[in-house]
Amino acid sequence: MKKKLIDHKVLLLDTTLREGEQAPGVTFTVEEKLAIARKLDEMGIHMIEAGDPNVSGDIKEAVRRISKEGLKAEILAHCRARISDVENAASCEVDRIAIFLGTSESHLKYKIRKDKNKAIELVSQAIEHARSQGLKVRFTAEDATRTDNEFLFNICKKAQEAGADRISIPDTVGIMSPNNVKELFRDLSNNLKVELDTHCHNDLGMATANTLAALEGGATGAHVTINGLGERSGIAPLSEVAVALKVVYDIETVALDKIPELSLMTERFSGIVPSPNTPIIGESAFTHKAGIHVAGVLANPSTYEGFPPDLIGRQRDIIIDKYTGIHAVSSRLNRLGVSLDETQMTKVVKAIKERPTVTRFRDADLIGLAEQITGKNLQAEVPTKIEAILRIKCESNVYTTAIARRLRAFKTIKKVYEVTGNYDIEVTIDADSTVDLNQILERIREIDGVRATETQLVLKKFET
Ligand code: HCA
Ligand code: CU
Image (cartoon, rainbow, N blue to C red; front, side, top):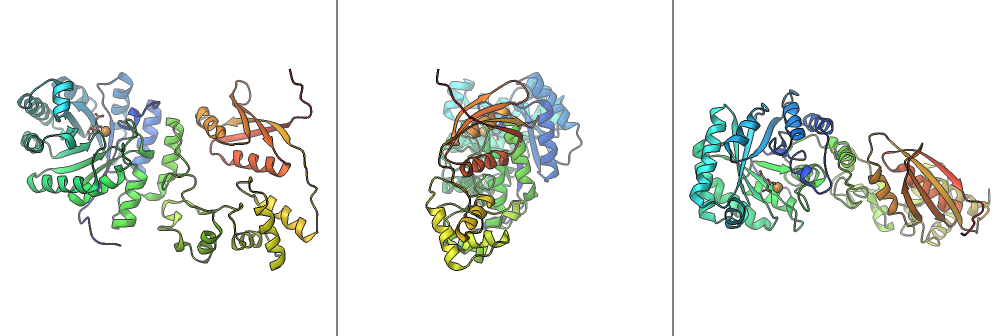
């Protein structure tokens, strides 16, 4: 399916530090912003929108410090179409200023309370002022996709005349479809000389599709954020756009193998944990489960993978649970140096299927089952329920609540407490057996950011 649908260079603008920090519940420290900016630069991002210096003192400090880092990426400050805002942004010594103004009927009427002519005047003056300070300018026609077409073309032409060499056409409320976006960008690129940016919100889950459609229509810049952070449901994620550009269009943008690290860093700083089924960066994105799928993947990964996990520096994983078939089990046991005949192997699979509540058999559990079946070293069943208290110490740079939230998702974990003292989190666990308990502990230890655990088995319990 590799047709040349985009035949021009694509630049990625990351706005995690501006749009991403507008996500509910998110705030980054200046140091965290610097760390993200450096990593983005390392991966080869083209533009970094560092923030709107007019919002607060710490944002201004972050924009200024990022500008002074000497990064390869072009550093932008976002600001309103006001001379005083432009001056403040210019004082941060950024490479480019992104001047925005709402152009839709609704924004003109309820937000800016200005008519169309006045809007054009404000935009032209702000752009000319920035240009007179030697700055490159992007103009953003905020809410462009709900703006009257004629006025949109008109104000973009005026912005171009005033000296903007890039114009952003955001789908501010995420209401476009790929076909509509493509057509809009085709018309605009045929009528304007400037480079066009796309900035798609994800309110209908179409941010990535719309971003790619805009690029097909003639946009040359795509706005993204790490983990898709942004106002409401966020905007197109860097991971999806960059990987889709490679896989679907064969276009190189950034070093894709840096994505997991950057995603995890942002998860920690933002406290927002992507769900397991999130494409590319989610925990399950390269995990195969059903027996038929696993058999296919073991024969050749291309059967159930559209692109290999190592494209982005990840590894595939195979789940052993009640969906598992003989191929997965024998492959795992062979890797562990255990070889069984076919009858024994069938019995192991049967035993797994008889434990439908176990969501993931560890290597030790499989060996245990194999031992039971071959009769070599029978494990005693522990029939009674086990109750345990587990204390968890988190890495110092980790957001404890993010880990506590993950723990709440475990069915066997009854209570989760964030606590003071030597440990950060305490949970109570109800397990069916030691196998079950071991499995839970293993999964908890696998969570990124968990540094140490201490398990206490409950011996007696006094009801009060
Ligand atoms: C905002 C609005 C914006 C701007 C996008 C852009 C949008 O929060 O200021 O400058 O390209 O979605 O319209 O994020
Ligand atoms: Cu936005």
